[in-house]
Amino acid sequence: MKYEESSEMDIAYDILSKKGEPVYYKDLITEVIKKKAKPVQSLSRAIAEVYTQINMDSRFQHTGKSMWGLTEWNPPETKRGASSSSASSGSPKTSRLREKKLESIQEG
Image (tube, rainbow, N blue to C red; front, side, top):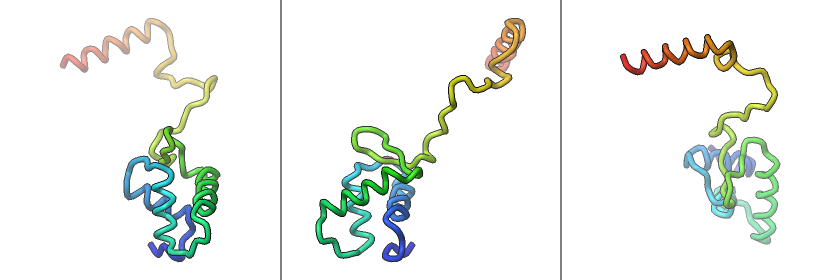
């Protein structure tokens, strides 16, 4: 990846993809600024700008304690009230049969 020609968000995405785990926001942004190799007048302003962009980009997810990761690392949340899968619905008799099948598979 040619970092000088890439956007800050694409660089941040590349960094997180390669690390494979959440990164402290300041470390991530500092690394983005270094890889971009663009002159920065004010480091605090540059950090604020990149942080704002990360915050608005749906590829990134705040994981808590000032750590950022990629949204793709976490499965999508299911909405409440959505139709449940057929495996979880059914009569009590069907549920018991499924439980017995599961037990026999686990035993055997």
